[in-house]
Amino acid sequence: MAGSVKFKRDRKFLKSNWDVLEFDSSDQAKKIPVPPMEKPYTVQNGKVIRLLKPESWRNIGRISLKDAIMKRQSRRKYTNETISFEELSFLLYATQGVKKNSGRHSFRTVPSGGARHPFETYLFVWNVEGIEKGIYRYLPLEHAVCLEKKYVKGMEKELDSATMGQFWNAGFYFIWTAIPYRTEWRYIDASAKLIAIDAGHLCQNLYLACEEIGCGTCGIGSYSQKEADSFLCVDGKDEFCVYMAPVGKV
Ligand SMILES: Cc1cc2nc3c(=O)[nH]c(=O)nc-3n(C[C@H](O)[C@H](O)[C@H](O)COP(=O)(O)O)c2cc1C
Image 1 (cartoon, rainbow, N blue to C red):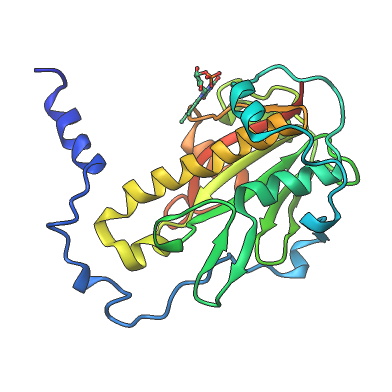
Image 2: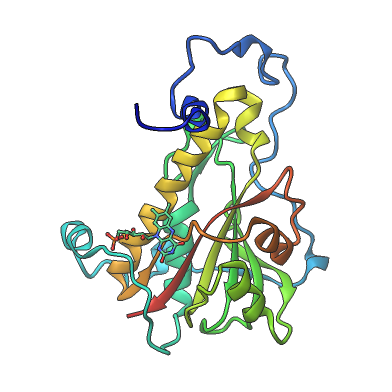
């Protein structure tokens, strides 16, 4: 039979397990308040830059969804062209943009099990119009980015090492972390599977949105956990990197 004993154990994670899970034991069932939808930020962290809202986009929507689907591929070679501020605004909205906020849930451009949206989106900005190099974080509720860490010489080398040599002269990198408790609050032991599925949704939207604007991306699953978490200054326990994707002009 294919697969070692260890793989069989890991495969359990991929199954529903819904029939054996004790949802009565969840923090939601215990009436513990719902965790925040967005990691707090303070203006002391640095600048907050408001992004362009969908109604003001001028150069988005030139190709059909059918063409975007047909063209989609992983792209690892980029030109030196700058990513425009409008393109950055579009790509962030396409991956995590909030269309409706009920206060307890947000409904976004991507689906998420139970509308839990367990991710934070960090950006390593390298060549984007109007934004200095450095590490930023998307604030989906405000459709803005906040500065997390100013650029210091050699940051790109740190990212290259964290991605095992996959720093590809992109305009910027998406670096997604998960805050698992947002999902665990409701889905207890089923959460890891749901979070992994959710991550696929946001990156697929990114792939298609990139095709729309003459950019390319590539999902990056091979990275050093320790180095990526340290690059972002996250604790690696309650928040840790789960996926990355560079974006560049092609
Ligand atoms: C979850 C995931 C992780 C991936 N990790 C990497 C990676 O670390 N490096 C890389 O070059 N490509 C990575 N890829 C891209 C795949 O290699 C690519 O999707 C596959 O070769 C098929 O090519 P296509 O996307 O052009 O159809 C990843 C893709 C996915 C979905």
